[in-house]
Image (tube, rainbow, N blue to C red; front, side, top):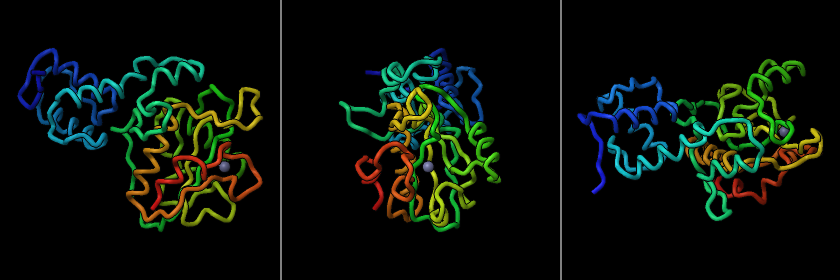
Amino acid sequence: MATVLKRGSKGAAVKDVQRLLNAAGATPTLGTDGDFGEKTEKSVRTFQAAYDLVVDGKIGPQTLAALKQVTMPAKAARPEPDKSAMLQHTAGVVAGRDVASAPPNVLSLKLLDTARPIRELIVHCAATAEGKDYTVDDIRAWHKLRGFSDVGYHYVIYRDGRVMVGRPIGQVGAHVEGHNTGTVGISYIGGVSSDGKTPKDTRTAAQRASMLWLVQQLCKKFPITKVTGHNEYAAKACPSFDVRKDALSKIAA
Ligand SMILES: [Zn+2]
C-alpha cells in the first residue's frame, strides 16, 4: 500500500512535498521543515481544490502525482522552441485532444469576483513572435504608448501556461472597440509566426490547457453566455484562430 502523508507526518518525504507545494506556488511559501503541520495541510487542500481532487488535506498517490505533474515545467524551465515546450508540458493534452488543466501558478493566482456584469469573454493574442516570451509589464508598456491607462486585457497567458492578471477584472477593459462593456479580455503571448507579422496560432499545449481552464473558471463565476474572438468583431486576425471552431466556444452555457 502506498504511504499517505498527513498532518503529523514527519521526515524527508514531507520535506519533498513541501518543496513541491512551493514550486506549485504555495502562498505563503511553506517552510521545508519536514513537519506536516497546519500550514502544509491548508496548502494541500488549496491545491486539491484547484485540481478537482478529493479535498482531504492528505498526500496520497493522486495528489502526489498531480503535484509532480504541475511542477514539472518549472523544473525544466529554460528558453526552448515550441516543440519541446509541448513535450515537457503535456498535462493538458490527451491524445491530441484539448483538456483544461490548472496553470502552473494556480496557487498564487487569485481570480477575483466583481459586481461588474460580465456576459462574454473575448479572446486575443499579444501579436508577438512565436517562441518568444513577453510579460504583462511589456504589454502594459505597449498599451500605455497607445494612450491606455493600463494593460487592456484582464488576463494574459504565458507560453509556459501561467495565467497572469492584467487590468483588474472590476475595471472595464480596452481590448475590442465597442465591446468592452460586459466583457473580459483574455490574451495569450504569441499569435504571429517567427517573422513577427504573419498571423499564426502559436499557442503551446500549456497555453491551450490553461486557456480552457481559465474560461471554465470564469464561466463558473459569471453568467457568461459566449466566448468569442477579437476577429469576430473587427477586420483583424487576432487571436489568430477561430474561437467558434475551438473547444473554448463550447464551455459557456
Ligand atoms: Zn485582439
